[in-house]
Length: 143
Image (cartoon, rainbow, N blue to C red):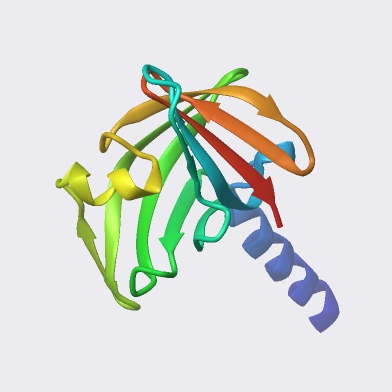
């Protein structure tokens, strides 16, 4: 009888929990920024020796610049068929404190020109990603 009660209680607990699982497919994972191309001038900036990483999981994007005192910004994102919109940036002041980020100049070295932006997914495979907005093209490799 006790086993039956435990089974019923366990099933009630598990049905009461709602897990949000999003499948980002090939987009999910960790990406290293390799190159930034300026579309208007044709200029290219080699970023392959920098340590700028994008981590994508569920609907959260973490952008880290390890060279810059491990500067970290978290974004919410929405992926459609051929676009990736990011918004609501929060800067990780410490490991326990997040602050809303309103100054987009801190994002420019990371290839992000605004606190709310939509990138078009030009290419996505198991090992490479190319994102493009109106000004820049960002080239990533998966690691």
